[in-house]
Picture 1 (cartoon, rainbow over the protein chains, first blue to last red):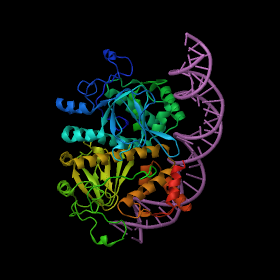
Picture 2: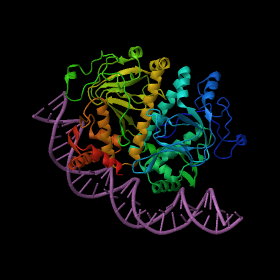
Picture 3: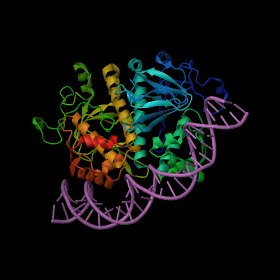
Length: 264
Length: 264
DNA sequence: CGTAGTGTTGAATTGAATCAAGTGTCGTGG
DNA sequence: CCACGACACTTGATTCAATTCAACACTACG
């Protein structure tokens, strides 16, 4: 991940995952299968189990709850609900958003398979955001007090969770830089590159993927309006850097996209 | 802390602190005295020792290094230096900033006494920002591997450090909302209110304080230009909400300042 | 006491927002 | 299976908040 690729989380947790579009034999496994253990989960190389040995993974597995899948638009939790767990995305995707007093919301983050949701609630014991599924999705729920207890027993887990939180902090600061100094085009290019590296992380194509969120969501996340996002995507397409058709996007010239960002 | 008061960290660590302007008997103690232990530190009620018992504080104390004071402009560390410690501000103040490829920097955070610096380096083992003193300042240095080891022994410390990091995450997300949807005036009002509650936290006046940073720093932090920050401060003064003279500021009408933010 | 850095103010410019009017797409129920 | 309605997206014209450019004042420090 370079400085220009904002939005790539380095974190994950147990979970089963399928490609967002048909691709391999793995297809046959139900994407939202809730019986897969941490040990056999396809994401365990990038998730909380990373750095844990077999017996440790088993202990982690014991505290993870594999909920029923969430339908598009369903909430994992809502702003100011009591904080009790963090969630690892197993399949699908989520958005977190914050509603201000005056009613309008801003998207604070998107979460792809293998990424951790809910850390904003740790300090105040209440979630600071609401989080909703962007498509049919599933998660592993990790009750936080149990995670803390287990972290105390397993230094590897404590270390790894510190790293996950540290990564979230570093990522949020990059977004701070992006929002405070980038133009609309730079923000959009950076966003696309960030998604690209996050999809790469879960073994999907770095150049062709589906945007699980609306243009409006992207705008709220990047501090732009829907219209601007739409215009910028059209402009990038005209320049031959991307090819967009509805939610389908293909990055045609990653180097030039990077160039947009470093030439500011 | 309300949603509108962005920038208030809920964290701290061992350290001695003096008021930024003459106020009490405490004045006689040297502000940068490096012999004060965590147990006798004036900040221990809001710092890492919070929630630790006497013997635990003693153990924490043993790993804390109390460095020589830093002069204005001196760096605690620089971007991409190897991460080895987090720092608790004992006195004075610091700014963190990120330099992008093209050379221009953006301020990512300000740190007042009792706040923790350097958590952006935990995940990648390199600091993501540079951090410099804004005035003559001192810190407690906490070597991170030792902090991790001690956290493993003291569940209270582990819990508290998770909370400190969680708080940093929640705070960064509030700034995300601020930068993506607030006007220049809303950002500035929010910034001042945030500073106010952070000064309150260390027992300083919530309404009169010195800005340790330049208008340029504020602008880089809020995603505005120096000129805009200057104009907004002048405008707020004309409206009778604040009184500014160089770095001295007085909040004359906190309720109206809050009103600026919730009326958006 | 001079100079570099910091801050203010004004005028002109501009990037993105807003306002407006569409078209396209998808999911649902008839 | 198609039609309808709601939502998502696009494109254009206009406006506006903040930036940029410019000139100057203050202050603080060596």
